[in-house]
Length: 215
Image (cartoon, rainbow, N blue to C red; front, top):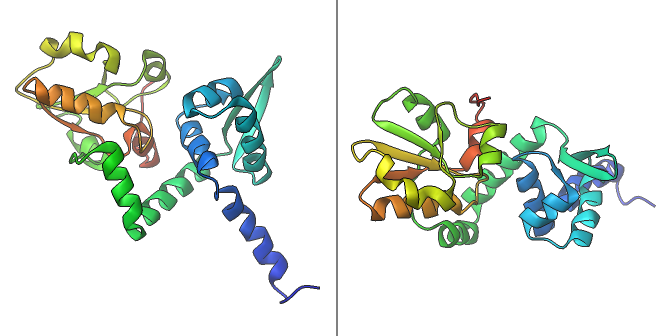
């Protein structure tokens, strides 16, 4: 027997909380927030065993946070809609403001680098003293990037250091909010005399902020 009349309502609300109560599921959502992926691609990029990935996706789908489509024998997953992405951004921002342990974990993971916000970058896109580089893979860049950004995957950055100007500030970005690729790029650039900063939240934050992407 129900303990209080509204209990069925709160049980339904709790479904979202339960779906988000797993670090693995939160990781999968962050990866899917960047683009659609097959189960195999998602498992590889998220660093989660394939069987576990499939099981966790079922929890997310039951809560209507992700959706899927079949292409032959392969199953592709994506976020259910843009509201899920915005909700994840709000959740991460709220948790960051509330939890000192989270702030410490992020600082330890990414390092203490002052970044550029998406809105700040948007205001500087036409500034000749700002150069934007996308240090994700060439495939990710082709699917969508900050307008005017140059594709320089991290693995190739060392070979292009002399091609980048020393009289401009370089803003480097990668994928999601906890991606370590752009901080690594910034440290490499700074070690070779460049002025550089990362884009806070990566390309995910750029999209969540409502800024246009190319193509």
